[in-house]
Length: 206
Length: 229
Image 1: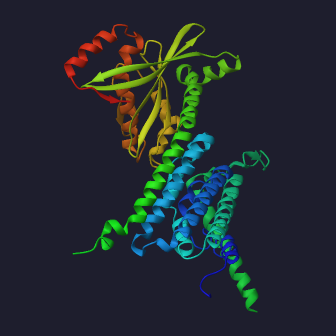
Image 2: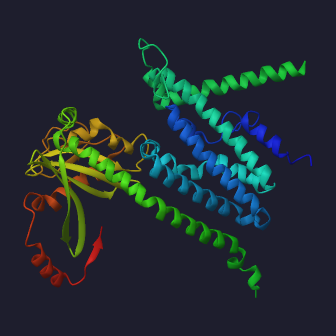
Image 3: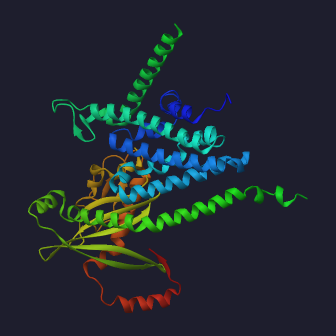
């Protein structure tokens, strides 16, 4: 079928061509809020990946039972369940990280990437396609978060993963780890990714 | 007359089924992980006690000297308007002498329950520390209650007078500067601190031995006992 991509296409599209942050501009709340360091950014990406994968699989399994007017309720119910599991798991085994991320883990429930993938892919396609779509989108989200987090943490603290990468003479740009830094970095990287996209499409047109 | 198949209840069978299944799954997760999370919180509480009782510098000095406080915990029972309340209190001893108390308290914040630790000196006259254990206040505004400069305002405040939240320059001894944009969160924390002090101050200094008798009579007076843990 022309309108339903295969599992592999779904996987590849999630990483760059349909990157949730840089292309679809979804899930910007965690993108802006938890990217002041690599560790919280990766924890967030893993949590979202876990919820995305589980929700996509469950929704795909029950897709033939869904009633059109009740589907959003079921999506939200499923997502909320897995978010709660992720939240409890972090609180039990990564207590400090769970405190750092605070309300942003429960807020994954309203992360529009997940509900978007349930609607676009999982409620229409088989389990394998839905799972690979989830993995692709999760990798794309992880790449976006870690690229922003890397820029912010290096410029803001001179460190990466808490390990010093810039000489101590580097004057820490504190603004980069504060909220304005998130907007500046996201804006610049978004422009950069789109600029590359334009150049590449011009190149292939010739 | 609509048939049962068209009714809202029947249409929602999948929602109901999933909600039940997910509910059971979450109950399972909570039973498994709940004790681990509680243990994490207790460990954090115990780790914070030296700084809350002695102040940060002295606590660091103590750990450098490889000494530690011996900590005992007890529960203080309060009965107000027929409602029973329980406070967990930790008494910290330094080389045998009482150094201070730390009480665990909680109350409603702007978004959700705020849980905090309040440090008081040995005779419960001065606040020696405040630490926020758990909160879900608005990021960027209300959650600044966890920041040290704001919490440190409470240090050295006398416990005899009620603390008041003011906007702008706190001048008097019992005034706490509100976080701009988060007056409710500031008031919540200050309120919890005030309430905890009035509730437990008397019992902190002199642990009552005759409480059993007293409580017996008050039970009879109030008739109904609600538990509020």
